[in-house]
Amino acid sequence: MGKELNVIHVIDVQMVVNVGFIGYGNQAKRLEQYFDSDEIIIKSKFHPTKISDPYNAKNIKDLLSNDCIFITSPNNTHFEYIKYLINNFSGYIFCEKPPVISEDELIFLKKLSHDKKQKIFFNFNFRFSALNSIFKNYLNSEIIGKPIHFNFLATHGFAFKKEYSSSWRSNKKINNNNILDTVAIHYIDFLIFSLGLPHSHSADSHQITKIGTSNDTTHVTLSFSNGITASIFVSYASSYVNEFSFFGTNGYLTIKENILKIFSPRDTFSKTGNFISPPMIKKENFDLEKNYRESLFNSLNYFFNIVKNSNDIPLSYFDSSLASNQIILDYN
Image (tube, rainbow, N blue to C red):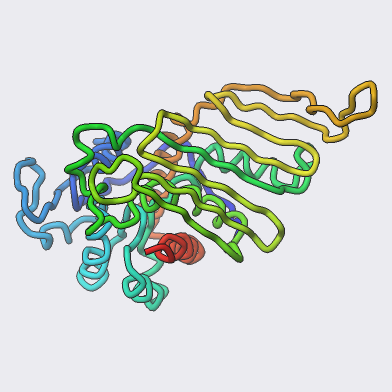
């Protein structure tokens, strides 16, 4: 795969873009804070059972006059909304990940015509991140060498918060894979987007807290045909950790506690001729939370410029999204 992303760092929409929202929970609020109120206007919001916000539409049909519609509802509702919109709406669709939650739904998306696929954008925002730029810069670089292994750790204690037990995220009936769908999929897609499909993969999921009914902890492993392996550990049942490591034949890169460090070269020896840790040749601040926020901004920016210019969304973006979705569906 290995696509080049056209990331623009300032939203530059010189026309008014009217936006409709399906859902207005935390993710909707997170996205809205990046909107320029003069050029990107939320005209209407739809929720199937609640009407309280002044923007609320009484019927989903009330969204159809917008230029684009955002689907930020729970994962298990994505498909029904996508299906309705592709049959009734001529504008662009921005849908949170994962695209869908079943094999039948995924097959339906795969069979869509190209023109419909090119109007749907799935928000795998790590594709637009500074971390992705670092990944590209050092993949097969002389400093790191041939890539061997990637390691991602992303944990925090959401499962211990009061609101978790009543959240749709903790309900196995509507969110079977839980953190695999909502967190691990970001890193799975991050790798697939650059390295292509893995030739094998596995996921080991557990419900550590016994709060709710869905798994709150997952370990994913991926193996690629070029010999690269990856490990992804995510949990809602642990203390906060956000780390990334990248190991190659000549060095390695780590991001830990918001510090990026690079160590190289491999051939670093003690006085007795034994291998020792390579010297640190680079150290700089790298805030992984800021990386997430900026990637979200860049993802929105990319989408709104597509809408502004009436361009097609690349089919490769759609295909990679479904490939990432397929990985997690394999563990239903």
